[in-house]
Amino acid sequence: MNSWLRERFDANRLRTAGSAAPLMVFLTCCGCMMHAVNPDPLPSVESPESFSMQTSGDVPADGSPWWGAFSDPVLDDLIETALRQNLTVAQAVERIERAQAILRQVNAIRFPQLGLNAGVERTREWQRLKDDGVDREDEILDTLDTIQSIESTVNEFLDSGADAGGNADSTPDLDSTNRRLLDATRDALEQRDDRKTEDERSGWTDAYETELSSALSLSWEVDLWGRLRSATYAQREDWASALHDYEALRLLLSAQVAEAYYQAVEQRLQHDLLQRQRESAQTFLELIELRFLQGNASIVDVLQQRGQLADINAEVPVVESQLRLLENRLDVLLGEVPDGLDRTGDTDAELPAETVLPRMAVPLELLQSRPDLKALQRAAVASDFRIASAIAERLPRLTLNGSLVYGETSLVSTVAGSGAASLFQPLIDWGERKAAVMEAKSRFRETLLAYSEAYLIAVEEVETALWREARQRDLIEALAQREAILQQTVNETRVRYSLGVTDYLPVLTAIQDLQEVQRDLLRDRRVLVSLRIELFRSTGGATASSGDASVKSAMGG
Image (tube, rainbow, N blue to C red; front, side, top):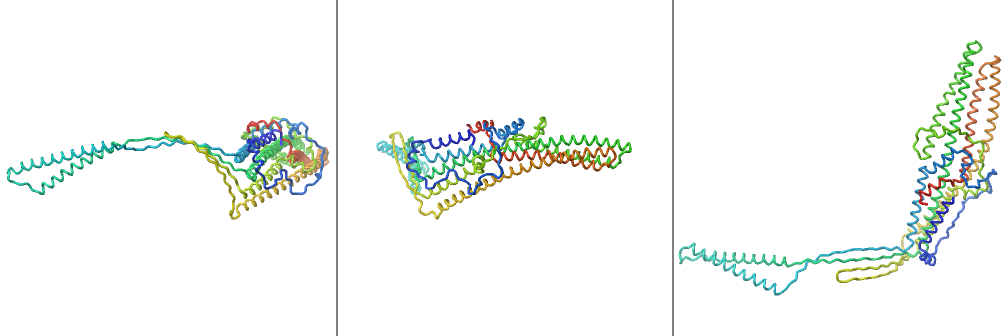
């Protein structure tokens, strides 16, 4: 882990553990973990004491990145740009931020939770004040009004009866008279009731009341068995795993950029080689055509040389296509849109002849040098902590609750406080919590197996890279010898052909073999560089470069 990541890890651990020091003292006294966690587990496989091949290379003491061994300024610039702009690395930074945010959430549950509730309530009441004197006076007035109404009705009836008969002896119909008197009385009473209802309605009044209240609530689970603490430590290990994953992505990205860059350099050198071979073939074709005109060569010789030139021309589009593919690949690795421009075209880049070998010691050192192995180790520790949390889930849980309430109305103000402690012990859950423990243990064993398998693969990658590089050097040496022999063969057959001692076929065969070996030799030299890149990656090459500054800024460090 580089110095900046270590500082962030230590700072976050101190902030997590010391954000509430007094409560931590109490937790230390009361809490205990029911499961022992190994903070540095080793792979569950036997590790060899050393690699089958040893080298004397040393890691640079100044902490420079591994690609500095190639001494290529163009490569340095490309990798530094990729580490700043690559979108996969940016996603890894976001995963680090998310894991740290989750860690803060999980850690916050360990401490008392304080809440504030505030409210206002407004009520409306309708009231009617009753006064016996006033109501009795209203009733008397209503009765007098009713009597006057009835008297007026009777008088009207008598007057109308006298006028209708015209005869003093005529007697009005008794039933009709009674009916009219009853109707007049009923109308008078209904008018009185209407007036009374209206008066009663107008006698109601509105009343408003406002009540203010506020309350503080406190809730705290006492972590008796380390359940919450284990969950916090597990998430802290997940956060550390995310940091190591970020380092692993940077290492992989730097290797991918270097690989794509040197493949592009190889294709450009192949293109230059084809151009030289084409010029040589064109020159020799002109010489044969001249000899044909002089009668010293046959038309078959001319056609054979033209076919050889056509073979070279057919190779050029393939190389140009592969070069464009690699240039586009570099654009994507650098986090940019492929634009059709060459990043290796304006340079005189060459394949490096020799680089410093990384130091090879014992395979167990890979556990400290390879970030992907460190990430898996932290993931295994996180799974182990979750076993402790699952075990504590089966034990009694103590929770403390308290509240303080203040209320105020127009008549009175009140303050009330309360406190309570509750103990919860699961009795019958039909094996749910026991199954959760079994699941956590199985997940831990699976993670430990994945960690062990990744270690085996890491040792395999180093061993394979060492052996392939050694054999690749032997291959290059053999091809170089073959190139020298074929060059002598070409020179000798050309002399013999010009003297007319032999026909053109031996010359053509020697030239084709030489050109093929030259292209193979160039490709195999690039393969040797790729194997060296793979060796740096498989040994966990240092990636602590200036690119960390942009990540610090992105993470607020």
